[in-house]
Amino acid sequence: MINIVLFGKPGAGKGTQADFLKGKYNLTHISTGDVFRYNIKNETELGKQAKAFMDAGDLVPDSLTIKMLQDEVEKHTGTAGFLFDGFPRTVHQAEALDAFLISKGWEVTATIALEADDEVLVQRLLERGKTSGRPDDQDEALIRNRYQEYNHKTAPLADFYKNQKKFYEVDGIGSIQEVTERLSLVIDSLN
Ligand code: ADP
Image (cartoon, rainbow, N blue to C red; front, side, top):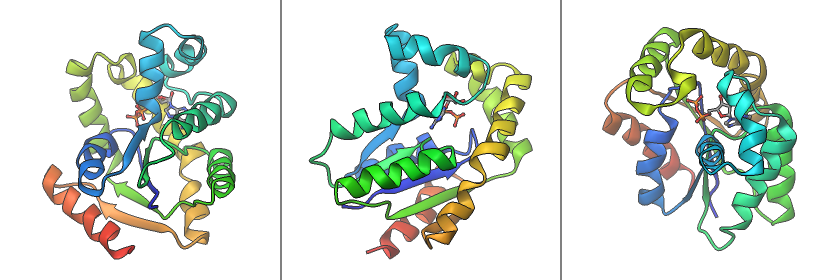
């Protein structure tokens, strides 16, 4: 079992890289943002509860998010490993993930951060907003709010995983393939 947390600011390329890595390493990709968007589109109870937070560029409350993540993991317990994308985003979520994985006899193998400069990322998101249809990508104020949420609630996770000696950093600037290669070097070194 190999469980990777892909870590990085909004727009850092977690989803793009996850699409390559899941095939290469035979991992189950769980993107909390995608699961929320799916639930909003299908107007489920979870979707209704998450929508206002997401539209404002705020994090969805931990209680909702943790429950959802656990349900997704439970659907794939036969997997060779998970690629967590967009989770955890708070220290509380990280603690819950550790406890949940331990209850299954598993653990986070490594957390890999995709590093990139804020201004580059804001521009990327505004570009993505032209085609993604995501309301949170189309307004610079909402994007900036997501960075505030990140700096305030998510950035402290780097220390959480550094303390566990599980934190790796990769330069997220370059071609998609170059970044995939950098990530692969880290993953290959884990075995
Ligand atoms: P990005 O990383 O580009 O911001 P995501 O698709 O990962 O995009 O997330 C979009 C939104 O979904 C977040 O701004 C937040 O509202 C919600 N969300 C996703 N994952 C989490 C999480 N782990 N905890 C709380 N909210 C989350």
